[in-house]
Length: 504
Image (cartoon, rainbow, N blue to C red):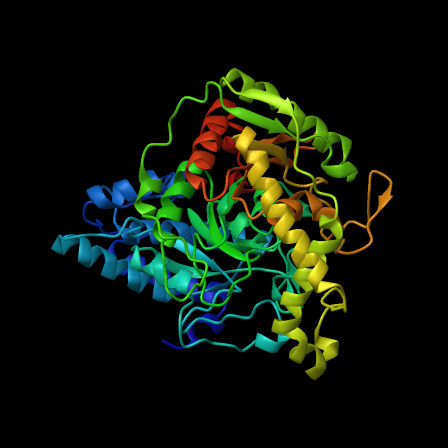
């Protein structure tokens, strides 16, 4: 499969799909589509608004077909995506053909993957065979990989169907999703605001119901920040939980799941987690455990409540929204206490190790065409040895911290979603930001701990913009983390408030 389909306009692709629907009885056509039946706009919207778990169950029961589901989501993409620019490469014809094959496999019986028939979009940093992968960079504008990244291979092996690629900042650098190849992705709760990043296109595609599941990656908050800004769920899994063939020994960059609920995210995690010899830090535990019921008693669970993260600036409204949720944990039976790990020195150490990793990946491109690289992708000479020593100390300090506490709760971001035309906040609560990543310390401080962390919807600002709450779990303990996040989600229902854009 080549990239020929990708180069057609969205309108051309979706027009071909609509024509196919008219002939085969897919949603929008005139004929009866088998057990799925003929579905009008309201029925198609219903499919897009279902949870991934319910959608997969309906496909498995043959209440709807994979073609029904794919056609519904393509219709949502046609209506919504031009306003938000989340899906930047669409493979509609290929997706419909894969959906037809999924229905044929279901009709024959036999074993089906846990994500059978579900539309999924992949972050444009992940290689996808035959589908353009630009990394948001002019260097890769015409890049069509021959092989899938490991995470894409696992998603497809679980039965999901690739619908396209989601937007990301250039080389994934930064928590504001814009680049010179595709432009900016807009926040569906306010089109004048950013969606965050770098998995911003994924978060917006989820929030608007264009896909039920999407993958992403995270170094300094790239799964958590856009989830917070778009009122969805993002998990920074433990390094090695979702293995990567490219990350080597570094615990900084991880791949992971995003979804509209914790339960959907857990289902997705069960498909993409698991050991692989290509990752030297792979975790050898059965990922099927993440499909077990998430309900548990939290009575007596000890929760450390953030105190200020060493004095970093946080917008007052973010602080207020996050702290208002403390009583939710206490009502769930948790014992909360003001406490946090020692983050001294992390502000100096993390950027050094992050820049070191970026240098290895991007320095040759910078030398080749510096005018193609945005100003913030730059490198510096620093004390790498000292940074590695602080990283080791942070691991030991985190281990000792979680001997007393089960969870650590803090804000995901220090600011609310900001203007789409602002590359990054230069000041917070009157404090100047020295670099383009300083405003995300609330996330990358946690990255430095190497513990799993999840972003869950926590409420809204007075202007109606989403705010996320970050829960950090013990080393390698995603299961308990998912359980408390699920309990919080069910108690608050913040995540059920959808962006008004999808009803427009």
